[in-house]
Image 1 (cartoon, rainbow, N blue to C red):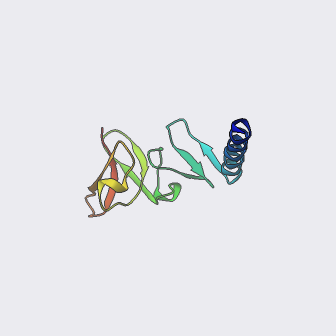
Image 2: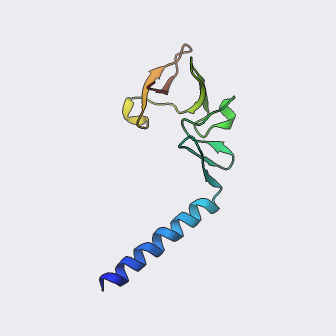
Length: 95
């Protein structure tokens, strides 16, 4: 019985993984992913139109995709919610 349950869980996970890749997702070298040509938080960019969150930040170290936020809880690990010079709240890398 346990073997059947384990096999079914493996099949479900495999199918979900295939659907994820089939939906246009690709895992990136920077730890992020792309979906329909748009990059996730932390991946390099030159313009917000390249990013899933619509935000491309440039700081002293790099240009990377980000997202809007209200608190640190809205940001991924390694990021904090901070304000840009234009007054927008976005997830900023904790260098």
